Length: 362
Image 1 (cartoon, rainbow, N blue to C red):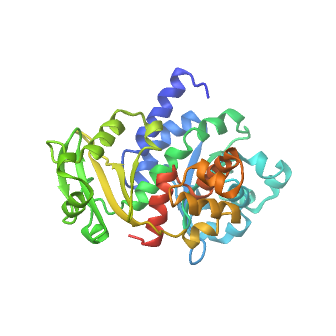
Image 2: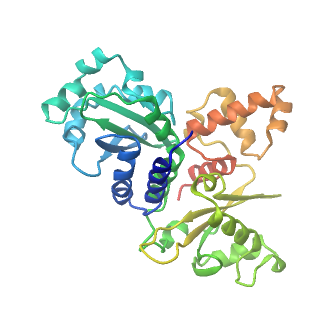
């Protein structure tokens, strides 16, 4: 979309804020002011949802509290939350209240009436479901407390940030074990098929887990290593990521190598830093060739999408899948896009990474 200079500045500030910390509360507080100005709103909230064993909610509200979203208060009206069904039906798509239900029904809804009773009438809402993992979802909601409907441009602007929001929530949830911005708890990544490096660009290694040296030696020949001790393929990917803007990084933050016995993946996570250079964690995994499609993923897909997802986990191209199933490549690409949206993955490599994580959670 076409943004003016001020909107570009605000969008950049939001993206910077989303990558400023691995704490949900700190990320939301940092992003609140520029986001509420970019998509003019009065208040905002993030709902974190666990889907197993039962649907469980946690609301995070930066800035002034929203009484309706307090734990016990929301629990009493959650079954009447008219936002939930529409955004669950259209993940990664920003919806405004007019697309959820007619205005008359909105004003007669229990949530609206209760918000007015509590002194903060939520006159308009704009929300988007953020699929993080099949068992973990986020939902961002922006509210206006005066009768002034959200224009379509607000939804379009927020849509341009959706994948950055998904990435921020995923990083906060996946890497809560990061301590002081750099340390990974060994009990999370101490298995023989996983390891990590922490690197300060361009090539200074800050730390590594004990098993990292074993994996690096198995994965790379001596001629593959840079003078710094980093393997050239990983150094080149890190160098490229550092030079990329935030939008381009989203689909390049997982490196994958297909081998005869399985896959080797490295996920690159930029670590927050209050000052000085930003460090990166390189999370290394070995994944068997026969990786199955996790049950939690399969449940979210149609039978045809699940079939195609299984081929994606074998790292088949769209052309190979189309030939195998006797359908058009364009049809395969449409299914792949729907799979990514429903599962909240950024790319085919990220699908592989997230599937491995569900099959062997860390």
